[in-house]
Image (cartoon, rainbow, N blue to C red; front, side):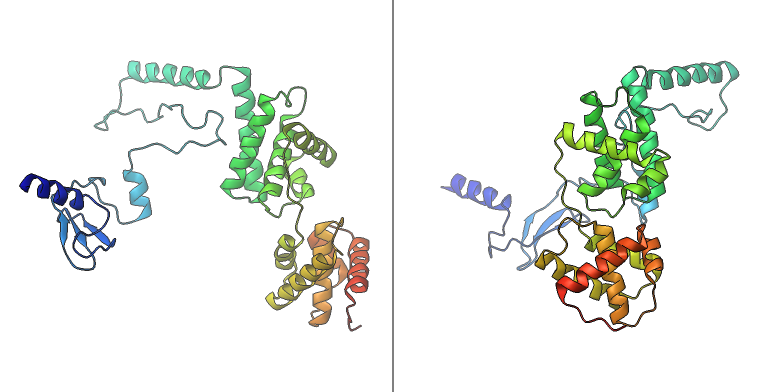
Length: 314
């Protein structure tokens, strides 16, 4: 009977709730090595092993410098960050300068290490494409998650043999645009084409190829995403932005936005909101910020005014 009670107590001690009050609010105190119930104060376990690091860090910089692991694996690095790199510091563990013969040996090892990382044509292609993606991402200011998505799309295209005979820069730009569309990041094809120094037609052709061959389903571009971007460039107030978003939502509900360019619709909605709130912004200002023509803004403005029945002061 005693053995049975001991087993029951042991099971209760290693359970996820307190055996005394049934609470799941268990607190682990690493200083004393105890697991305590936060409600009734019962000590469930003692002499717990501390599974954390043996060093302390008070800032993020300290934490990163003391960490003993390498960088996380990433699709935006050609070898996914799994290969090693030989440091250029020609000193030993004690800080003493290495002798000349050892330095020459390390130089040769470093050279062959770099060569071994990009030994095949696929690796060389990936190294060039990932460098281009990195440059593009910095230039159009997209977050790292979007860059990772673009790298995955490019790798799929490479596996399917879509890059052969085509420009690496054009496929990389198309992959980045596809990643922006998939994550609803407001970047236009023109912006990415200008940053990549590849003709817009080539990027568009490669983008259509990726959609067709990789069977990628793209969400329909939402004009709401572009409102804040245009407003930021033209200095339009938050109140006017809110009104423009309301106009676009109403247009979407009535089907007035179907089949229209999202950037042009966002620009027209902002222009209408500016007129209603007496903010002095011309069609030219908004069109330049949106990257569309004044004619497009004017046509979308007329469509929204007619279909939504808006009364706009002259």
